[in-house]
Length: 436
Ligand code: ATP
Ligand code: MG
Image (cartoon, rainbow, N blue to C red; front, side, top):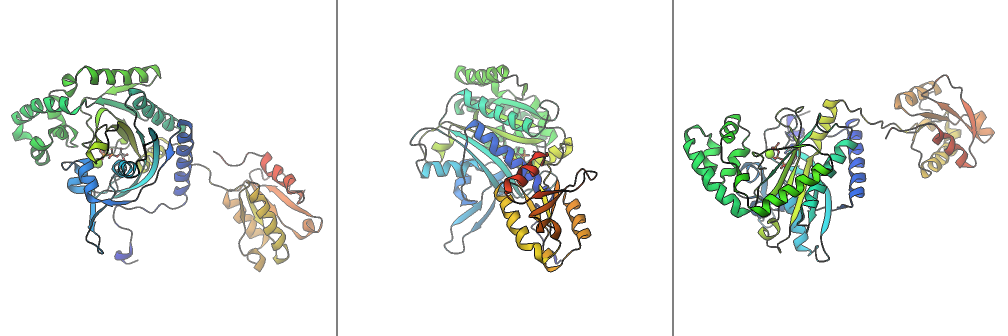
């Protein structure tokens, strides 16, 4: 294939059987959201560039170098493929006055774009599960969201503490950060010679971000820096203590990481990350926190808010690394159709089975003589289906079909009446079918 027709670098095709893992993951997510009463929201992939510049802050990795921005050829508008989910959701809430009737808890599955250097767990198009609770000021909702993440990780088969663990910090409020900032700048200036280029540039524009650097040398300098926690006032400390108290009560272990500042400007108070040692430098699978100032920053009414984003590709890589088994995507029944005479009955029966919730793969083009019985049985075996249903002429003459348990080949084939259909359905349901 010519180079110019290949997928764009850093953007992945998700093909079977891998796509079955995605669907399995999404099923777990939907069930979780229902249990926690978070409702779905969907916003556009393209937004005005200014939304992200204003929402995320100019001196952030994303806005400085990772955005896919372009000019609309029709009218010259500056547009951007969304690099994160929150700004677009908050824009939609403000635009539609959607919090008029009170707070909302929302979730979304989003495709995001960032112009990063592609590597394992880091792509230019990637996906997140994103949740946002809008209008709740209290620490209870911060804790709720962290515990939601724990529940999901457990549902997926991961061990909390061994496979993935929680890191927590508080960024306090803007005035507390500016007091800390003065002390931090003074400290960093003493180490100015040792700072890398990014950090030197951020020394005055956004010094907190130096602590967020991926460069180990910067992280070492960060170790000795003045701690933001020591600049927090009574209210911020009380909020943090309350979040911790709830996590303690729920039996969730965590580490307070004073260097955890998150990559975006809009966070305040609680910030957290779920991290793993199994994915190298791409060790953060989920990150979030409170962002009480974002609504105002985007021209809305002051609205407390908290949310997190979970990278789906990284989660799936982690599941693979830990060895969580692939979900079974096989159908319940493979329909074997010996010849054209059986096609109409087979089609009608398969439709009735599907309407009753049984998954059926019918051998294609069998009516036109494609595939001997032997070849069709081989396909049935390879499909992983639990049963084969055989529309043989002798059985059909008696109003029956043959049924074979493919996972227990020693079990003999039996004949089952086609009418009423529920007899056949319960037959197919009686044995364990798909793994869930
Ligand atoms: P990192 O520090 O790894 O760059 P981040 O702080 O930029 O992550 P967030 O903006 O907080 O990430 O996004 C939340 C989650 O989305 C991350 O924890 C990660 O799981 C996932 N993620 C972020 N960037 C990428 C990417 N380029 N490719 C795949 N997943 C990503
Ligand atoms: Mg990043």
